[in-house]
Amino acid sequence: MTCLRWVAAAAVVLLCSGCDPGRPDPAPSPPLPEGSSAHTITVDGRERTFRVYRPGSLPSAGTVPLVVMLHGALGGGRQAESSYGWNAVADRDGVVVAYPDGLNHAWAVSDGCCGPPARDGVDDVAFVARVVDTISARLPVDPTRVYAAGISNGGMLAYRLACDTEPFAAIGVVSATMLGPCDDPAPTSVIHIHGTADRTIPYGGGPGRRDNDGTGPNPARIDGPPIPTVVDTWRRVDGCAAPQRSTSGPVTRAVSTCPDGRAVELVTIAGAGHQWPGSRPPGPVARRLGLDEPSTALDATETIWRFLHAHPRP
Image 1 (cartoon, one colour):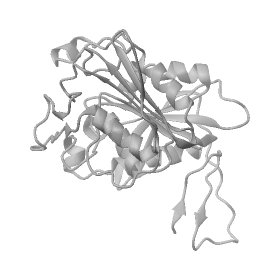
Image 2 (cartoon, rainbow, N blue to C red):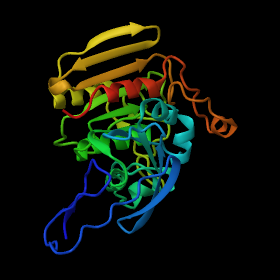
Image 3 (cartoon, rainbow, N blue to C red):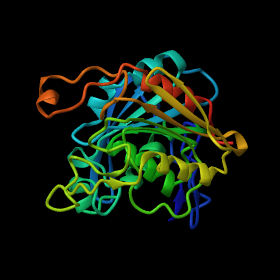
């Protein structure tokens, strides 16, 4: 039986071939609990885990937005939930936030990146799509307001989702690049935040300091184009106007308006490294790993959420 499961109500809608019209509809799944909860699903024979934050402020009627927050390499769903402040946005604005876990703390976004998931051919796009399906079966998610955000390897997966799927109205990317083919993407609103001093994913493109040419047990071929070129790709996809630029202190914004209410925005932070701006400073272990201090020039979570909220699917 082939089923399409992308819903905006608390029950799964099944459009299938070969269904028995005399069989009663399956019972709706119970709603997700308030607060933070952990979940396990099976995708391609692998057990996959994710967390969901459901605020207590959800409306009693109508639909709600969903943000899928994708951690970077070495991170995880619990780490992303505690580090980037999305739960506070959820409580204030009535947003549901999902925090998927990459296998071995990484995401497969191309043949050479990243880590064991890329080496083993893991389909992380299918996993994230199933996460959205699962949440949509238990909460009234608005299908025009499903968004993805991510940092580093998670930002690469956000681009992969925009390239390979259609449900995401907009994506927010921090300190990432676009790897692998993106031949026929659906128009998608994009905001990309990047520091000029990022040594892991250089603003000017090319391999960063963790690139190993995609070899060994933890492949990491991270050799993308210059970040302005990545963003220009989405301006062409969306048919946007020329960007309007403005600068305030170290922050430069290049904003393009596009047909059907879409937009593409590049936020450049002079001197910023490979971190989520406005997040908590790294702890002792992260410092020993040489992770950068987050920029205080802006709050990436608030910046991305304002952009996502303003750009639902037309």
